[in-house]
Length: 271
Image (cartoon, rainbow, N blue to C red):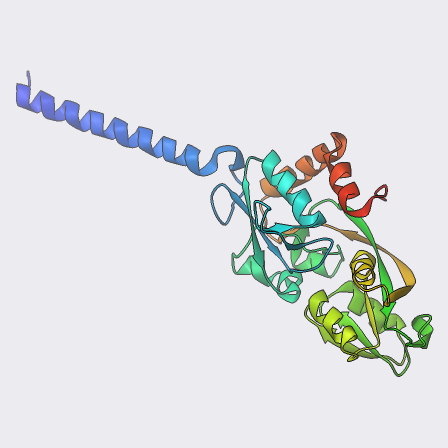
């Protein structure tokens, strides 16, 4: 039986609408995923990083940087984001929330970039990228403190950052010292300048920055702890995101970009 012209027009209109809807849906999927398909990003097209700022030379505020932040960790991650054709956004959070995995559970960020040492304990709650930096611990002392080594810390107030490997090292090796925990380097630096603590035990590059800011403070010891930093992600982070970051990091090493960024902050060959 032949259908009426009106029925045929209605059928064609319905078919066209269905086709338009299908095309729109396909276009939407492509726009949402693109090169980052499977990454499971907090915000489409953007790699959102959580960091504890300031912690120079690894992260600090920089109004001229695309993300509003710079530092070795951030500049290297910016290069990774550029390579993956993603924008980079940075959220300032507490280090404790970051290293414990809380920021990932709450869906606040995709990656942690905050001089985070890879440890077995942290790997219980986090997934790490391949290591990108080898670090040391160090002891910075106040003027005329009488402290020449970690053996001289008995009865002294030693500042450490909460939740860090510097705290763990001090707990194991600073016998007789009173450990005073602070949320970050800014508070540690203010405390030692105010005479509230006698020393700071933390990552060597950060103490170097402190000593350069005020030469009357000196680093009296360095401690080899075989620490390596990695970019942290959620324990259940997508394999695609982890692989993409690792692949990009290797590519930046291969083409010399990593070395350029490293030298701009440390001016020595990376370990």
